[in-house]
Image 1 (spheres, helix red, strand yellow):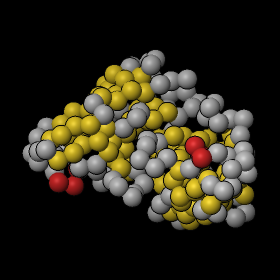
Image 2 (tube, each protein chain N blue to C red):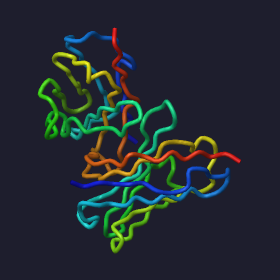
Image 3 (tube, one colour):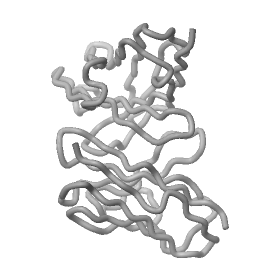
Length: 107
Length: 115
């Protein structure tokens, strides 16, 4: 099974900060990676797929990069609405695996 | 706009079978794969399995022995059965459209395993 590891688990940041979250796969997954944002009490929301393609309607301050085993989600200028938990998810093989999540908190 | 809605009992006794149904509206179930995902309180997301409208399935290896997912195209629904549940199966259960990634989600339904 492919394991996904995110870092950090928690991130404290201020409005306007540039934020980067890393996701590492236990084996190469090409670019078959998605990123989600989840707010308390809500279902996850798809932000990015195929490592770097922004889902329709997602603000351009979100971007994704990487391929193989290492990926990043970057928020260029953190907004109040962005404080949430972020998950990566691989879809390289027949299974689907999520990272453990990164909580972005207010500093 | 595709919408998904989970339904089923919110309380299941230990050792019994958890059964949930997801109703798809705004689109045909005969157009994609469909998944169940769960999230224990305060924890991360765990993919349970997916089904294609043709009936082909794939399950999380860690749950495979206890999981069954089925589809009813006439009702635009798919269903989850998880047998021999324990307290560790207490979670918010989501259904989602699975085009490799998950682009449409239900709101989730909380299932508590308790006697």
